[in-house]
Image (cartoon, rainbow, N blue to C red; front, top):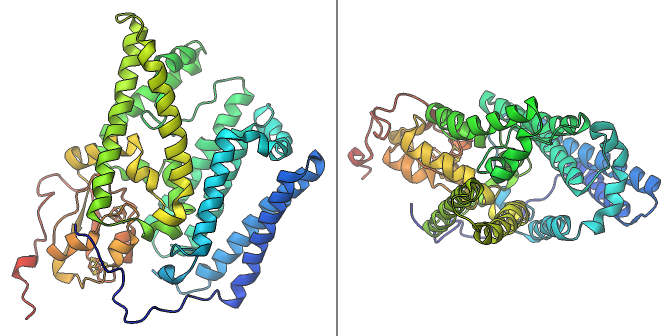
Length: 450
Ligand code: SF4
Ligand code: SF4
């Protein structure tokens, strides 16, 4: 892994990529939809606001799907980077900055000024009543937007990656888990007067699921509550290590998790923006493992406090819990994690902040069969693989040496292998023996070009 001082070897700056004329119409529908959304935010009349909101969602969804169909469905199937480094929207240009500011602003309002969204929230009341038998709140609004983003941009992914079964399957999987387990099922549970529980999120990502307070509350809820506690404990402490042993962290990060689902669908166009430098990797290690340590410590202290063995532990756990909830649960995972997509790539949270990713990463690196094998003799050093990596792994460096890639950060999205024009990379779950061995065919040291 090395710093890359020169982003491009081009002698002249390439001109910015123009949007093809046919794609302007669906993009105009998206823009109109966003205007309708602003109208709904500002309209105190509930009926009109509802109409504006539904119109906005229809225009944005239809426009985005129409654009994706033209941009990907109408072109030959295959890997096309599509001028990502030449577009203002995907190369940290003005559009990317505007999108980043708008997304960040939305999260700030959602977390700390939700009354500004009151008209939108009230406009969703009938839908919320129908699904959950309960009035809408800011989190229902957020869940609706989030799920729609995963479904619509998942549709884009299905067209874009229609040539690769692996990507079709994992895109369909994250769409299924977000819609079913991240949105409909929790709503149904509320409608049935049960605790709102997310079966696809586990401790330490859903950090309070193994807190004594949450466990006690669930256990009071009868048979289903007991099952929820059982599910949470088994998934976090038993199933996660076993599944990671066999498949690496990809079984969760690229197939199930809602955060990963948003990154793989809505964030797909920003994956190349992840920083591949050694400095970024240092920050990754400095942040993600202390965050995992913090949530493990907090959980342990809470259980110690609940056991009564150390009285007055609440003096420590109260502020620590508040700090974690604010700094990590809100600011990092939401405001920065998604707000910074257009500037820092789609996996800012997964790479630098998520304690579940840290836990899975440790298992993947030390106790898993998963690796990406490379055949260095075939590599032409084009760099497509590193460019495609959303976790900031400089895949090319491994490929050139014929080294297997065994990295805690890798989420197993498989895009590096798809982007490679030479078929150098292969995601494998074979036996652990020889997992770290280099290419059996041609070792990089035996290559002589001149
Ligand atoms: S190394 Fe490949 S499979 Fe792993 S996260 Fe990067 S692009 Fe995805
Ligand atoms: S995409 Fe393939 S050929 Fe290009 S640098 Fe990566 S491994 Fe080598």
